[in-house]
Image (cartoon, rainbow, N blue to C red):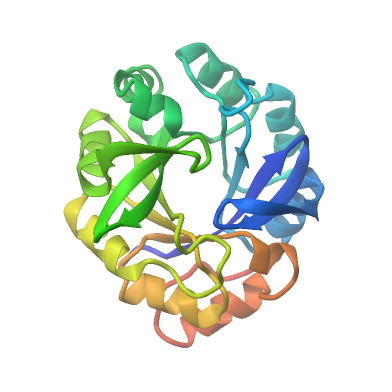
Length: 253
């Protein structure tokens, strides 16, 4: 069995790392480059940097951030926010990013996934999906959760895979920032449906939640923000906890 990945996520607004609850009430969590370097040294497997207002404010993700991050990290990182075309991705990958994450732009123009996968390879393309459960059905939302769509979660995830996504990063808007646990039922269904890795996001509050998401949720990776940013869970402690429960993780050097 492949090792399960622990991925701190840094949501960035105006150059600062922020974290909220259910996508609102944001508070400052520090400098993204400094935090990224700290997590790299602490044993994180990967990092995700998302400019959460890039699409909403019609800005492009700045390649300068990717260059700055790459200079301070020795682990893979994904960057996303405001990516709309091949040129955006080309700049970010050349600046040092290992993968790019696309979300709203892919829903608005699904062919973007095909284009990126063809130009750069599936392994570079992460399709992020923000979804909320409405009357028992999960629906995709855009622009940081501001705009509901008629896309159903599992249908869109399957289409993204067919178009060339290398991974799906699924965030449950209902669980985001609540620290009450991941959306394990939805994650398990998605993991069974897809052949590509699923990254779980939204709801991590303690070490037990990661054990649950890797077993009941069948996720390939667990992503979290505030519990790492504010020192509530240390990555080494988390990996030791998971390893003691026979959940495969990469050891912290």
